[in-house]
Length: 185
Ligand SMILES: C[S@@+](CC[C@H](N)C(=O)[O-])C[C@H]1O[C@@H](n2cnc3c(N)ncnc32)[C@H](O)[C@@H]1O
Image (cartoon, rainbow, N blue to C red):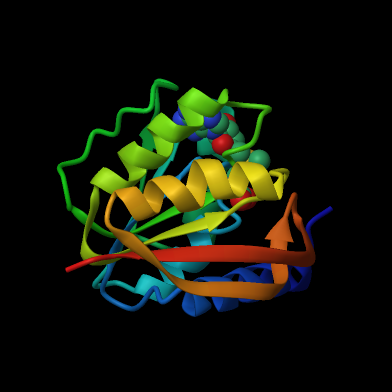
């Protein structure tokens, strides 16, 4: 059972991770594969009322749970979007300041080809100077190098930050690694 203090500790940890990724007040960000929002809610708090979070998932139940949590904590800057499951985002090129790909690129969901297409699609919507932040949970170093680091470099991103420390995973806090890339320009 989630107590208010457990949940706030979870959200505070996630907000620290997002701040380390260079995300800031006033930004418009996409949480791709948001689940029930353990990073969406802290991101919405971080970007504040002048910013916006687009929370996208193909799981309607998770999106419903997220919408209920957003309502309970009183946030008005989260828009939930249903994803078809295809790596095609309903967003224009360069239209967001930041994209999260957190704990969603693993083999459970994607083949290497699908993963590469999804990373490219996420990169497409980041504005020049914006950030693509990846929590590569359940991925091998080889997969991270081949399917995340190499394609982002090819697409004009350079690594801006590598965070090691407490992260939120599966409704708990554990140690993890977050890689953040910045788009040239
Ligand atoms: C393990 S959860 C991670 C949730 C959240 N990002 C987090 O770190 O707490 C992975 C999420 O990715 C979503 N997902 C998987 N494939 C997807 C796709 N092709 N498009 C959108 N969401 C997808 C799943 O439905 C699930 O909610």
